[in-house]
Length: 134
Image (cartoon, rainbow, N blue to C red; front, side, top):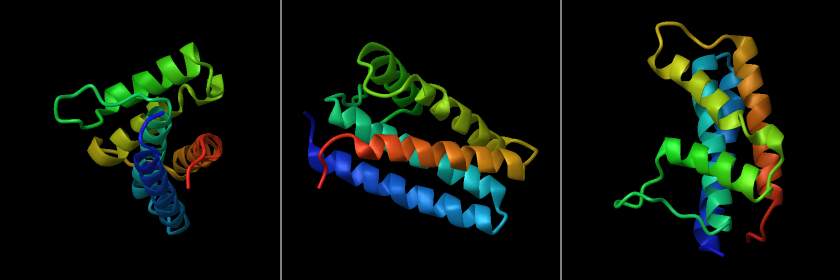
């Protein structure tokens, strides 16, 4: 088992990011909602990876987005069956919404922001229910 303190810290960050996404949605800032919804899942996925004893592969010890997405889906969903297959596409889908919000000429609409938020709520509920964090 990896460092439980680090996993708990990332899960706490995920919960704060989700709260930010909720607030941004209520205030009709859908681009910001999509951004925070993605980061909520990204941070929760890091917590799940740490719980499973998986650490970053970079020399700097930083979590790369492509690594987190691939390791969560490939290792924790597909190989170890620790999480349901329904979570497999969430990081990628929310990343696509974030890219539209952050880098695209267009904006995230209310429906897509609501979808990202709903997926993030479910992702955190499932990831947060695993492990024995304090």
